[in-house]
Each structure stands twice: as structure tokens, then as C-alpha cells.
Image (cartoon, rainbow, N blue to C red):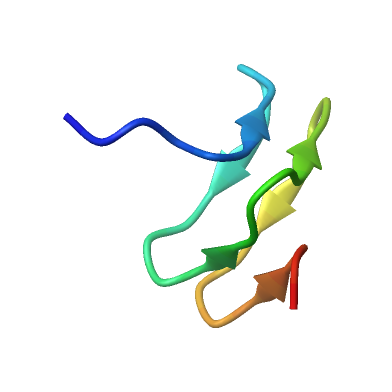
Amino acid sequence: MEEKKYFVHESAYVDEGAVVGAGTKIWHFCHVMKGARIGQN
């Protein structure tokens, strides 16, 4: 199992197909949708 290089709070959703950069923190009640790019360039 690959370790994530970012943090996602248990109440947040990250859809499959979203790209999250290393060191990013996604907090309470967030929804990162398919196709979104957030975090490290």
C-alpha cells in the first residue's frame, strides 16, 4: 500500500481523478472534485 504524501481530514472527500500535491492539507468538509489539481506544482 502506497503512503499518501498529503493529509485529508476524515470529513473531506477527494474524488478519484483529482491530483493532490505532496505536503497539501485538505481540512474539514472540503470536496476536491475529479479533474482538480491542488497543492505542489
